[in-house]
Image (cartoon, rainbow, N blue to C red; front, top):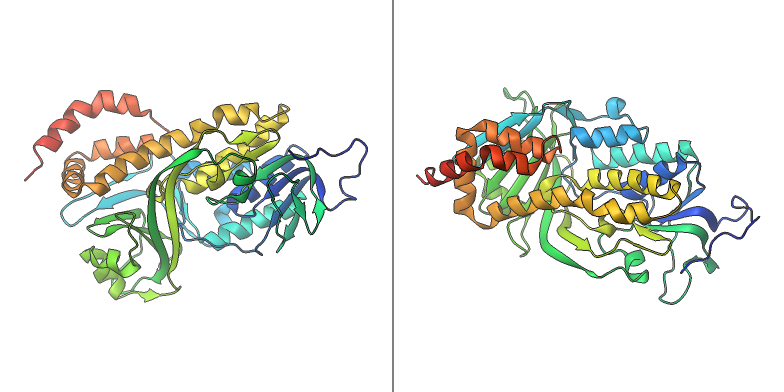
Length: 389
């Protein structure tokens, strides 16, 4: 599919050759580059854009995400952001929250995170070519500016519409959900408001809104539509009175930025010496907040697999990384599609916050879903039945 480096060829002497070439310089691509450099691999990362690369997302990193970053040698303690200690769900009638049992999460601007990953990759010796497009023509070797790429492994980290995936013949899969989202940043009013210590997830008739603290009084507000039909930021906010009132008194700091969020999976994420990471390899709806974390875990798994001499381990265990986030996405999207079920569920969780805490532990992979169902399933079912009022 692509040629390996010829024996005795100088990798550093040829700007188009490396042990590993990574197509895509977003968080997943940079994380993979950093992880592979930890093993001593010569890594060349190529992206058509220039840093920093922004994308609409909720900008909240859960405690397990911070752990994965630490394994990549990245500490966000000195980065401008805001810690948060738990998650809160709310609709017009009910609210329920739970604190994390281990550690804190961190709200950090996407651009700030990208800068940290870029600095770490630079320090680690990753070679990077920005504003450079990789030519991926079916039946031909990948090239840049007419010169063929020569590497042992080609990694596609080029997003949900991955050209690498298409070129490698790995598009065989399914998109299970597709929704529209927007993001903007706001400075909260000072009239008695002391900021936020949790990520808030607000449910309304128009969709969900996620409010993540990313500074002392700065929040990231991300909204996602209820259905596959296009929507607007204001339409979702208008369906959530409490949030609409708060933001009416807040100062908008950044323009709205849109994105599409999907739940997708593919039959294979490797072929020959090609592997996919990040959204290129499959995704879970942004309602889970796990997109970045999955990319970091995949980067570490890819590192371990290549260190063992191939991509077999990565192919075998990749689905495990997607499984739990996609299961959680299905549950929460079911609530989203059926407002009466959502209202009953939130009312039941508000009555028994220990159940919400258990689900949060599942989300953080601290407790297994079957165990929670066995322990709480009957009681939760009764609460749903008797919370119709």
